[in-house]
Length: 469
Ligand SMILES: C[S@@+](CC[C@H](N)C(=O)[O-])C[C@H]1O[C@@H](n2cnc3c(N)ncnc32)[C@H](O)[C@@H]1O
Image 1 (cartoon, rainbow, N blue to C red):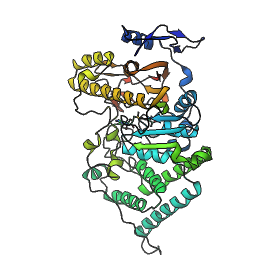
Image 2: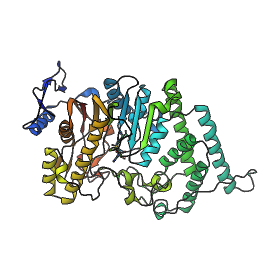
Image 3: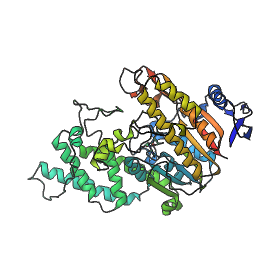
Image 4: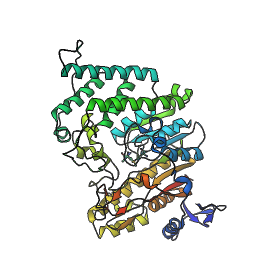
């Protein structure tokens, strides 16, 4: 079933475009140009910018536990949830990243389902969504920090320390660890922290500490900070791992205190009923057919962030993988070879863009083809789990590769209409300059943190709100 847009109406003085009247028909001549037109005419909606929010606001409760590339702000997820669902309904995020949608769903009294292919995302989201009794957390982490202090004091100063403590360090045998952590002493110190964490019996506390450990790894290595490509900084001044870890734990304890206070007693006591979280593929969601009321998500982009590369330090230390290449498997938007049936792509706009791009670079065209095909499979899965009239809020920006516009928002909208969704609303949102994550290199189109870049990426993004018919 497909849709014809009969009217583009501006709603009661609002600058928001709202497509109000629709007629279901079997074919839509010129749907693509109509769609392109809708996006061109769309005015920015300032109410979705959240310009006044400070970093403190956006990292409240557990949101600030761990850095994560391209996460969206909790206030945006919260508004999507509150405007489109009722208490106790199910909200899903198939690309949960560090769990923003899941936390906001629980805080708003909704049930939530989330998956991510990245085991590091799974660890972070699991910890951030799990409220821990503050007294228990303080007692248990105090023991860990005390033991580490005692251990290093006794090693550095034999005579003065009376009590001694034994910790067996855990340092995975992998040359990439030496590559990123060339200083043997620092490697051993990190290994000792990991060894002490490993001995924690309570799983919640152990995961909490692993999340803290994961977040200090970039600072404790020669990773060039702020770089979104794995780059070494041989002149970097590296902090002392135990101090970094202790500070991180204390910061996370404060976040957990807030989260514990704002979460309802009912949800804390029945977390398993409210939270379903897995390391899984977005094309295989752990949800029944027609069960989910809302999906709030921001998908990966094509050839931008390589999440597998960016999380390699954690993946290596926690032995999620032996090789970074192998770790990329299953990540959508990643640069890797995989052949798909070209006819499988439904979107005409996508096909046009791929053809245009293949004149400039066959390799990049192939990546975009894979990307759109895999995203189409994700939309099919979203359709399966959503209730009729259930909605999807997709936060997505457009981009450019080799000067060819890659109109993700238009393509996604087209595919979803072809799969049986209708447009409920499309919001154009300016990304406040202070949170614009980075610029793009004009030659490669890739994200870069160097001065070579001369063009801002994603000054605007869209929130596509689609409804299952
Ligand atoms: C833009 S991020 C999501 C960020 C999230 N909204 C947040 O606030 O943290 C996109 C996510 O998609 C994940 N991803 C990539 N391919 C996937 C797949 N096949 N299945 C599930 N998740 C995938 C990446 O690991 C990444 O965490």
